[in-house]
Length: 226
Image (cartoon, rainbow, N blue to C red; front, top):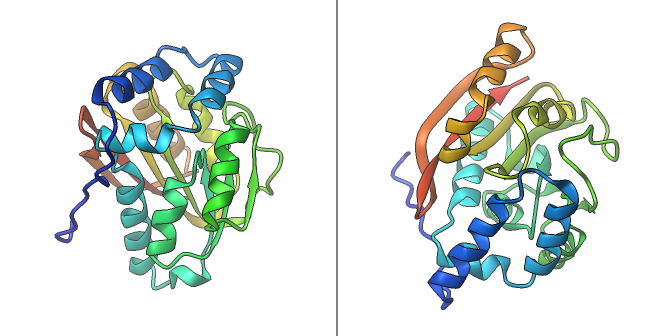
């Protein structure tokens, strides 16, 4: 899009180990306790592992967010953002590069949130947040933009978790959400988006099919407006 190039940072990591770590996270079948425990152990090497596998989802998410805001005549510096499933802060870093400053983040993994805190790109961060449940630690109808990258993937959350991602967005706010291709094939995410659009709760602005995500496969990126 717009001639943008999305390439991962070249970090010297063992390909087999990094891919194995990613695959293992997909085998947890949405078990919250297992996911929390796994990411607690994975937090230290997560950035290196996903970079070694060409993970560009955060960069593309920020690119789409910046484009949506620009099309609406808004300045990124004036936009309040919730990064739902912020992990170690990879999306926050990309949002900062695009000029966003007021970014909050939530994630299940407290050790991952500690990594995100160290980046300095977030205003407020909360760990221990299960996105398969309502996000009680943030206000409903509060944010101008909600990003969610890497959450709707195999072994993590069901499609209905989208409802909890939507709740903190104010009326007129944008949502930019990635769905890994393998997840999209196996879940009812598309159907759930259609239901929310049909009910008038969301407007679908763009569904970027097979966008750049990770070397192994692409993702669909959803740009929605509440």
